[in-house]
Length: 375
Figure (cartoon, rainbow, N blue to C red):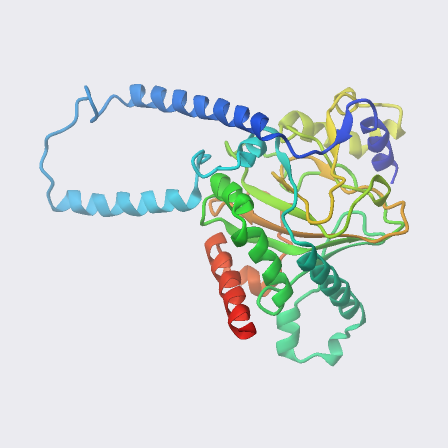
């Protein structure tokens, strides 16, 4: 694909670097800046509202029946707003990775999955892929068809690349991986909660499989920029977990930090339409854009805002690249808000609309039962 090769050339200059895990001191600096901005905004809001509190002109009217009704309505509204999680929760962001993602759109977080679980998950995914490629629908019962749904979701750059949907309760291996990632260690779950809240809804669960010879993807965002509807914080988060060491020849994901903007999204939309003038019209914005290659180690992950521009690279090695991934979204937003953001999630899981808290309960119970059986 010509446009993808042109983008690769534009991004391969001196602004390209490896995506490293940011030092805690630097994350804390970003967190403090966001905290200061939040305090300033709250102070300004308090001054402009001018009511009820210290020095305000609060009403002394006694509550009656109508006030009770109003209170119930307001309580329901407050509960709904809590589920929607409209602001970044600084207190929840203990590791400060959430602050980095709010500011830059992507963060690398090392060592999230144990080697034992990683090996089991990689074996399971490779086996599940083989099953998916050999299973014939005519050999399945209606119940099996419903459970399996489609094995695969749509993916850009289909040559030797697959986006395979994974089950939850049907796979103890997947449950163990999610338990390690979201329960045993709280770094990821705290980061998700700080941005999306504990009512964040499971939006994707699968594996990205890139075999040798897969082509480079076009730069894209999973959620496109919408001029009339832009949230103040990321509407969703996606986590890519490497199930083997990923070197540059294997086609690591390229991320453009701080690219969830109208300027960047319009730049690629216009450029890709005519393939950057068949290579004659080099984008100054992209050529000067800092970009990071996610050459993750086994068990490392990249957690990112899906509005951040990114793309999978061409696999020029002789090895398969497998990434386990999951996404959560803010309950406030739906696919109608971003028409191209159709979830890579099995239909049975989509229908359940599972929250982060519910996922944590499911995998924690499975881990507990497994330990009980072992004893």
